[in-house]
Length: 125
Image 1 (cartoon, one colour):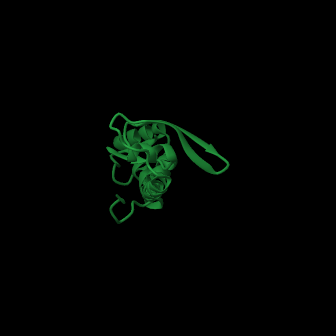
Image 2 (cartoon, one colour):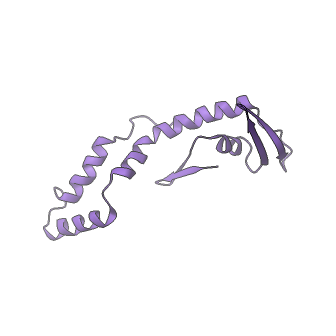
Image 3 (spheres, one colour):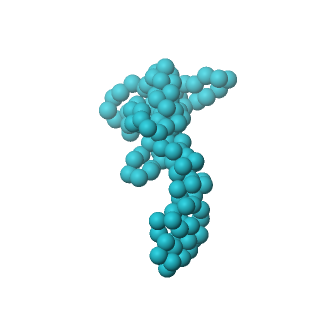
């Protein structure tokens, strides 16, 4: 099960394992994928729940993909922000030059945010 964390928000990275754990938290299983089909070799759920159907898993993956797509701006920003050492050096010089509002640091951050805007809508549920 894979999740990303961003500003206190945790969102799923789409996948079969993540979908199963979202649908049946805490269940343990062994999943066999062969020739384009899947089946549970083993299913252990202390709460006695049945394994999710593959239709349920597919729908959950679609839901997870919508959430993942929403946060694409965050992942793109992460890749494009200058190295932290560079940011700190720019910030130091901007402070020393009393140029926080129009200095190199703010320009570099603004450029990344402008090129990767946060969506105007709320994230999908």
